[in-house]
Length: 325
Image 1 (tube, rainbow, N blue to C red):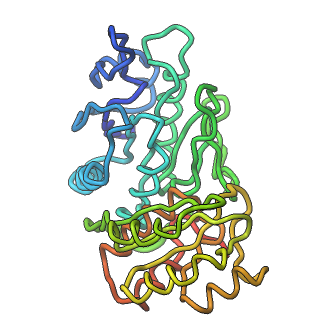
Image 2 (image 1 turned 120 degrees about the horizontal axis):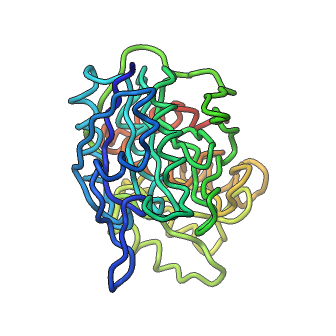
């Protein structure tokens, strides 16, 4: 029987009602008591390093979770992290970069309603996650609503529905059907597992809107070492902001030009407003990466190096299906 480590961090799945709204309250034993069928196919041990609404999850928590998995890696066959849904996609992407080439499943899950409610999705999500963690498949992923999504491809696309997560620009890697794992995409992990610990959290996001004050670029640049700009369509920068981009480049900032459009990605080669700025400023382009992966990968890359060529190489090295350009 497979040995699984359940890592509880709080979130809706573990919430209880209070006078001020839902708040994390249930411990791991209370979660497992709601899924007694799990005892029939796996042996679960549990720890609770955090008890947070995922709105409060921050990069130091990703590093903590990665260290816990590293410390216990050789003792278990798989790992399940119960996590709030609001920042679940960011945590899954971050763990994909902090823990690479894992030969064991690292599964993140949560729920839209607490596990002690009658009409909850939590019990099924937790059971599905434990089943997937026993499957022998590899990699960091999210299991939610029967879907298995690569950790770098998930986004929360619905705030209330049970099918809250979508795989962006990439198919689901598997599904859970009738208590079985149906795999669609071959496992991509190869080599020995690699654990890293450094993140540079001085990464900022600037979303373009018509009429944005040019001073927003300098203000954002003061707060970060890496700036992600969400532009329009396949990507481009209005003429008004070219001098500001030049100043960011001269200040040694790493600039990534992304798109606000969730599907199909960027392509700066299509229009003059994109091609010109890429050639002029040496920007990085995330192509079909999700925003969550772009943010966390840039934090990870800048945590390893500030050399521009090495930053470019690492950013464009695919990890856990994050990039298919």
